[in-house]
Length: 319
Image (cartoon, rainbow, N blue to C red; front, side):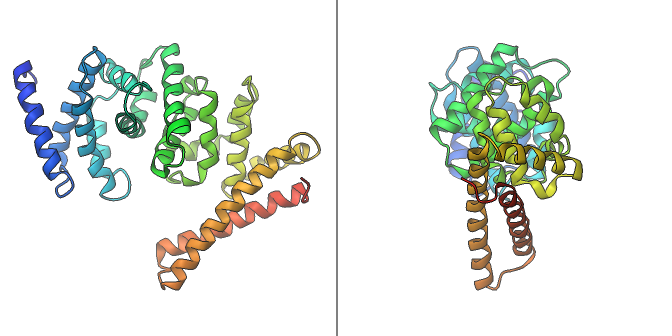
């Protein structure tokens, strides 16, 4: 694949060779930097063909399997993989159109899952593109298709939740994207505890929580505000004093009216995470593995218990 001028016949031969090699060796030998460059080139070409109406789901899936082998090697996108994605133009019209069409609910769960992983890896390019990568109506359809996949089809897959949250927080950071988030996609914020806390868009969202609260108040259905407010209680310990005061003021108002049921929902969700994290800490202690990751988990448990306690004081046990 070194040449940029491969004929259709060359690409057909390349597909046979590449898919055969990836099928045999992908788990034992994830691609290196040079190979990843070629994999992205292969992927981009076939996404372009897919966007033009040709069916290349198999080639796209195999290419993404090679890319994801680098992801799973260290439990997340490796620096090598992120560098390879940055060096490839993932915001080109043909690439974006291919991804968008591959996420159509008529396609297989496997293909759509691979595309969600690809979007999570490359969304920064999309949101920072000099020109919008989609028309407004395409953004709406794109968000709706992700919501169908994540919420309707595979809601309880933790790695899918994590990738969808990466995309969702990226959308929230982008004024261009945030107004096109599908209503049922907001529900993913109920799983905000699984987000990578080192994720840049997530940190931005917490730092700009008040701006996002104002934005959510302007949405017609109230779902964005409902779930974003719950997210702030999940991560109450990370908020600055001004935002904490605003979050508590809202909770006190909600506790006196119809919002009490939502506050109790947040309490229950945080309580479930406290119980799950406590069990995980106990298992590590039993195995004498309270090393650095274990201490990080214990610190997170203490923070969650504090967040739960603070909210429970405001609700006063009212149901």
